[in-house]
Image (cartoon, rainbow, N blue to C red):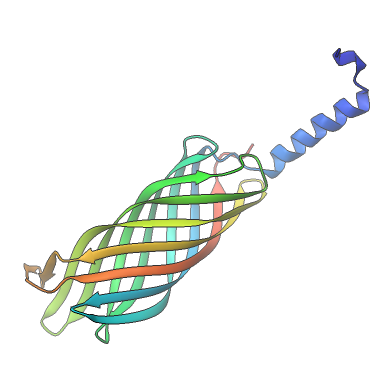
Length: 196
């Protein structure tokens, strides 16, 4: 079929629709930053004693979209939990990859995961008790591209680590391992530096 046989109105409508879609959807390639609030249900188990705690935690993320579907992810999170009625903090650096489905749509599902470097810290009468270990993390959710460079996102997340490399007041110590698990929901906003 020759291009000249297309009605001018149809061609104009197609071009206008494409331009409108590109104005609505940011490009997911390049850098993006995100701020999220996380509601986490954390459990800690040591020597058959299990404690749980529910906490809100902030999360900041920097990502680089290699393609419209694949991104490299790095995030910083700080959260609190309880073990044997004692409050402790867990700070983590999450590193991994994200896969975004349905490139170009306004609502896109995503799945992400990788490894996290997590640091346990508890203030005790004999000094700070700390441990740094590595564990897996993952998340699945949706992004809604509200327009320009902005996207809103919500996801269910999971993380696990066993703390066993202990130090008490900066001195190596032999303590029982603590298995830390988290199920959580996070929600927040993302800004893409490159909008179409």
